Image (cartoon, rainbow, N blue to C red; front, side, top):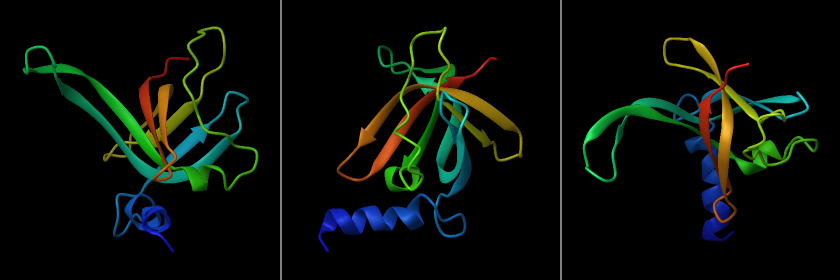
Length: 128
């Protein structure tokens, strides 16, 4: 087994293990409404750095990182992607914050890393 295969298998602990890793329940919902419970890494940070000034500013930095092999474990699922058309249903990602408050987010864009086997989802708060 090469380093890439070992790294992808290590993701089972790093991203999906809630005891020894960063694992956190995340539900991924495709535009048809089909959802899949997954475990991954998620964040919702309200302070970002302005790249022009280097100053901290209030903003939203929301993302989730999921293991591609876990998404594809369901043959009906595909890689999530951002859908810019506001008239179309988006991919959604739902997770709780550390206090147990659930929020649903729209996938703005996805950044799959086929070398490591993860997809980083850039999210924004979803308003129905």
